[in-house]
Image 1: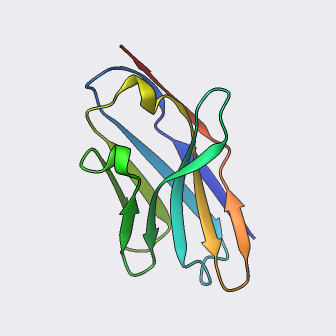
Image 2 (image 1 turned 90 degrees about the vertical axis):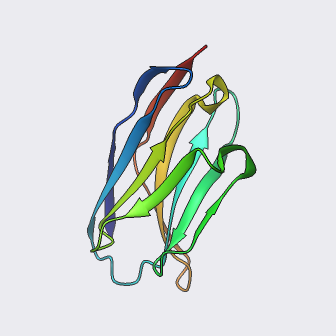
Length: 117
């Protein structure tokens, strides 16, 4: 089992920055993909950024150049640095740890990000 605890959300004006953190505990040795998802009000949850255990990152087009996903050296914590925030970035952000071979999926509780115009 893997437990995930997120922090760092909040309220910010457009153009501002926030840094989200997701601290993981439990059995992490089989985790090979980590990600941040976003669920906007009334919308489904969608991936925003991913990072593999080897450090390969991917972003959706709308956040490229503004958001950066990273991990600590132990791969126990994943971060999402969000700069130049826009109102459309508003939503609940969830971190996700995945063992793609065993199809095991773990979610954090979510953290609210609100960007005002």
